[in-house]
Length: 182
Image (tube, rainbow, N blue to C red; front, side, top):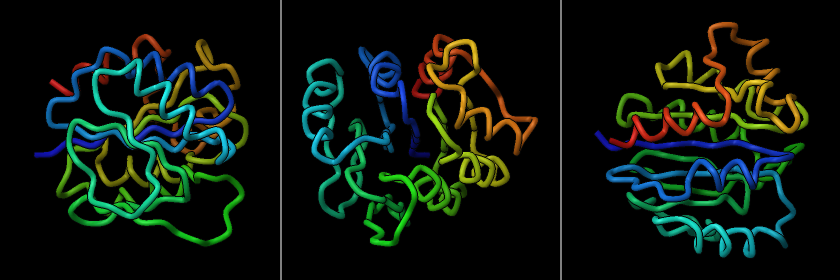
């Protein structure tokens, strides 16, 4: 079964994402990242991450089918559909790229893909509801613990919605990713 890793983050996310993904062999997995960031900064972030990761890092600029062994960074509000087709949603959302939109769309794919969803550091509540939907559909879900968060907002809200949510510090999240891609 193909594996999908979804990561949502805001404040403090870029450094944490780099830590989680550098020197990582994705095997038969694909990574999709919704990092709150101004659109003008995303290309340089993707380029920098591409230099520091074993897998190719691609900025999701156009609708496409996602390939294994690649890391995709959402430039727009992105939804996933069957056959891992990524498409954009032009709706109005409070954050862009929107984590809840990405996570909610992936909740429809849990029968066909093994999904690991991770909500990292950030202000606000984006991603909390979507993470809960993924959890209810059987995806493995992790919220970053307060111990390693720069801002314990998004994962805190996810835990408030779902007290069964696995909360781990950034080091243990990396261990979970390593086990998942094996």
